[in-house]
Figure 1 (cartoon, one colour):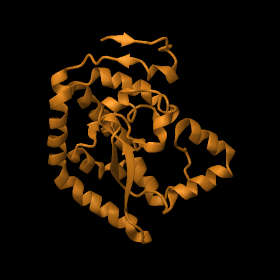
Figure 2 (cartoon, helix red, strand yellow; figure 1 turned 120 degrees about the vertical axis):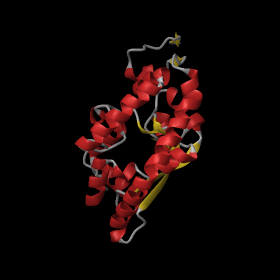
Figure 3 (cartoon, helix red, strand yellow; figure 1 turned 60 degrees about the vertical axis):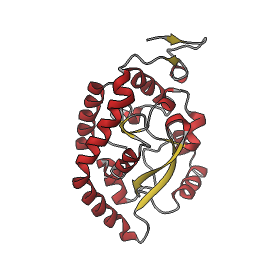
Length: 227
């Protein structure tokens, strides 16, 4: 593994993402095996997952609005793609967020640092359950099949967050439904700290590493600590 610090302090969380990294993991798995694993696992899971998605969508649709949510995210090499999710927020959620942050200084500071809120007023009651159980993420399996995402990778980044992200590793990877940051103590880390997790994963991509993250993802889902 080769590191080029370019006069940056690697111990600074805001700078570590900018370190130029040369992956030390298997090229074969990175370039071929990882994608094959995605297709095999998603293909095997679809007969079980699709009925669950339809049931969840029907429950969400009871409020009379579209149960599915589509949003542009930043993908590999900076390409934009539409992410698929089950809707967990009220309609016009972005407008609600702007109004809420405008009148709540503490929430505005929390959003600026973390790009999320611990008590988000936009989330519906059923949406809270879906998020805690991670069921709202299931439609992203279609993103994996399309090749926009991987089962394991960095947390998919919103377009507006790109300027806040201090790293480069993200752009060398397909965003993941789960990943090292997703199964970490996520609520205690800032948005910029994701770069540290992404850099580490980018260097160490391996079959065994992905299997361990998948296993940890199961634990996170069962403990209902997803976000």
